Amino acid sequence: MWGEDCYEGKSVLSPSSASKFCLAFTDLVTNWVKSIPEEIIPNILIRLPIKSLIKFTSVCKSWRSTIKDPSFIRTHLTHTLNFNDQNATHLLLFHTVSSDGTFFPFGIRHIMGFKEDPYSLHYDNNACNQYCEVEFPIGLKEEMINSCFRVVGTCNGLVCLADDLGRYAYNFVVWNPSIRKYVTLPKPFVRFATHGGYDACIGLGYDAIGNDYKVVRLATLLDQHDMFDECPTLAQVYSLAKGSWGQLRSDFPPCAMIGSSVQAFVNGALHWLALHRVDAGFNYFVLTFDVGSESFREIMLPKCFRLEGPLELRLSVSGDRKSLALFVRCKSETDCFLDIWVMGEYCVEKSWTKLMILSPQGPQKSLPEALCFRRIGEVVLVLEDSRELVSLELVSKQFKKLGISGGQFCSVDSYEESLVLLDRKDAASY
Image (cartoon, rainbow, N blue to C red; front, side, top):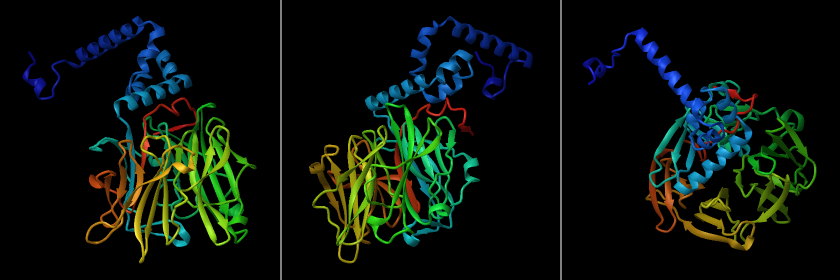
């Protein structure tokens, strides 16, 4: 039976006895580890969570070597994705920016009176309850030009960050918050000092055949010509495996990119909204980039797609993660609506289907902004007035409060924990 001192948080062992106990326990664990046949150790480790594996890199050199091996990292990721699919334990990464407000000179978002921008992980379930807060590397804050980073996108546990909310800046980061490591990318070729004004889109994707993560940056040069179809767009690709930028010189269709357009990575390809110049103005379409073959193609938007009035368009991945979704928001004196579209069959333009039209809500007639689809089939919205995040059930059209403030700017992305970057010597730890 335990003594009263134990209940007071005090040890009944003397310092010398405690030291002997720790040594004996360490010897016991070491002997147990040695007794396990080496060939079955990877099969055991592959089933363990990230936090445990990080601790086990200190158990012995052989375990450390196994856990940091690129093939083990890839296999563990596959096991994690399959487990999460079977058990519906996917996560959402929330990034919310609190400030005095935002404004859009020349169509570029600026943050006024920045206060804070926390990151947090939540389960993608009905409750959307919090999984954990995410510690951001303080060292990155010291390098920033603008108030905070923007989350470009996520892929296999990696988060791509861009320092582009406001002034031109060239800090791009690939970050794995699960293992507290990040890689800072070298500055890209296209900069204001070298090419003048530009609009740039960025994306993060995975080349499954080459086992390489790539950051793609598409910059439409604005200072050289007045017409969209004459404004050249330069494409650059950063390979994480090579650690450098490369420039693509062919295959790019004549179009203009929309600055800071939201990416959607699905079926091995990145997707952005882009513009074609036509006689009467311009047309929207989806520009796709196959990360493996590094080739471009175009996907047309729905033929009945309305272009009247000032439109806000946003791409997303569909709830089943197999195709694309499109949110079309219009708010003018004559028209006000939020359309939600899904491409039922990927790359089949005839399969675009309008799931619903959302009208202004409440006595204030406010129109929410759509952020992304969830795996449970609902859509995350941010309310216009309160900036509160809600989840919209499409069949019943009912809002469900998530208990999260969206601040003046926010992003929501799917997230899966992984060991990616653990084997990289150039990755910074914090």
